[in-house]
Length: 169
Image (cartoon, rainbow, N blue to C red; front, side, top):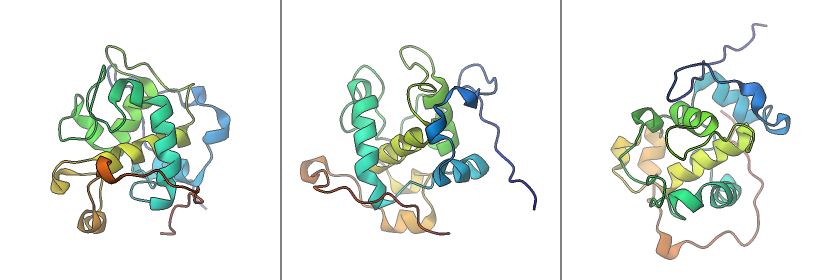
C-alpha cells in the first residue's frame, strides 16, 4: 500500500516550510489532521457536531484579537470577504497563517494549539462567515447550497456537547 502524499505547508510571510514537529503530539494524528494533510481541505468545515468544540477553542484562543464573532478588534475581521493574506481563503492557507504566524501581532500557534485544534478554529471561522457564499472557496457545492449564515443574535451555545465526528466519505 502506498503512503499518502502530504501537502507542503509553508510560512505565510517567509515561504519556508513549516516545522510540524512543534505541534503538541496529542493532536497530530487525528483523522481530521490526516485528511487535511493529504488534501489541504478541512474536514471539520460544516460539521455541526464539531461546532461546540470549535467555538470553545476559537473563543479561548482567538476572540481576544479577532472578536467573538470574527468582527475584528486588534486583529483583522475573519467573518467577511476581505483576507489580509488572500491565501487564507483556502483552508491550507489559513492553517499556515495560524500555525506559523504572520506579521504584526499574529504570533505562531504551533506550540500553543494542537493541529486538530487549529482545524477546529478554522471550521469555526468558516462558520462565522457572512459574505457571499459563492466566494466561499472552502465550501463544496453541496455545502454552499445548504449554507446558513451565522446569526449572532440567535446563537445559543450548545447545552450539551455532541461527539465531534467527521462524516465518512
